[in-house]
Image 1: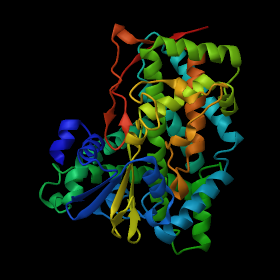
Image 2: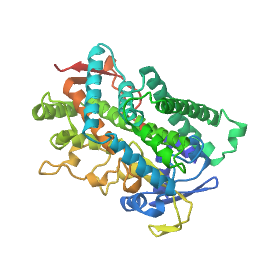
Image 3: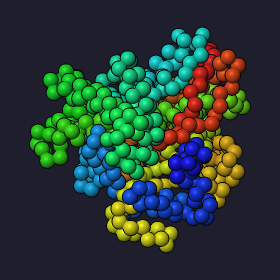
Image 4: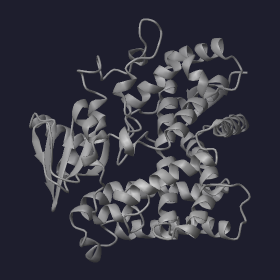
Length: 443
């Protein structure tokens, strides 16, 4: 399997090739002692997303390592702990304004900060990664911990999360198959690196919790809600669980959303036709008004373009992993209890039975003859069912408002006359190769 991954450049591509070789939509593998099934096709993927049998998370050493050593938090927990804490997290984030009008105002403020930053630095090439990931993290952290993260600290944290994500992609094979190898080759297996990073991230979260304990943060936020609950409900409301949820929220917010935006800016940089068409629509429809999420229903071509970005550059090509709670069937195959199931969204978004010419980048595929958006039901960028991404309201608004705000103000060109590649780097998630762009003011 490792040879195939090397040859095809990613685990997702290697599995996809295997599934085609065996002409199957349910690919079964044995990786070490773990039974793994990868499902393909919309019917099978929807089944795994929505049916209760697939609500579990694997209890492997590797998964525990991803959440600071124990299966806690909400992303990788399951059963009663997951149900209660996911509900608590969503409810209390909403109580402090997440997903409401106040959040949109904060995203608009961040958009203005980015526009100002670009204007002040527009004599030099800018790498969008640096500004976008920091911005989404700041909006999110405001609701979790009641404040922005200081810039140098934020940069350190993002570098840490990026390096951690890379380390997990590399270490995944070895540490998942042979957890014992961490004792013999701790550095080579990636174990030492991941443990060090986990400790550093844990320290940053710990510091935020301590500030709340001495009431040094003014704004009401998620950490305060959790600490109040700890007073009355000591069973599962522990500091360790709070730390794990904070980590889940940081990871969820740090890369996926900003990667979509980076791909969108890269695509308009590489194709001036899209760029001008989007700018014309923005100019005619909202002019210089500050964009809001409500405008996504008026800026049809812009919305279709952003949907096509999320299809063509699927950020999470292999969704999951899920643990089967008891024996079940999928597409006629028996899937034994405790099997790990992955869903190939990357293949679904290129399925020729759903998409005409899937290999071609075509925003118009999302617009019907009446000029309205269509085919949205075949897109799963935030998952589906009870494990659907709870931060989708932030992600959607953020992607739309920042993209429109940047194009409203700047013409995006390649720097040094070098056209960057749009070939993604695919690890646990897809990311564009690092690139810089010239942002030329339109005003």
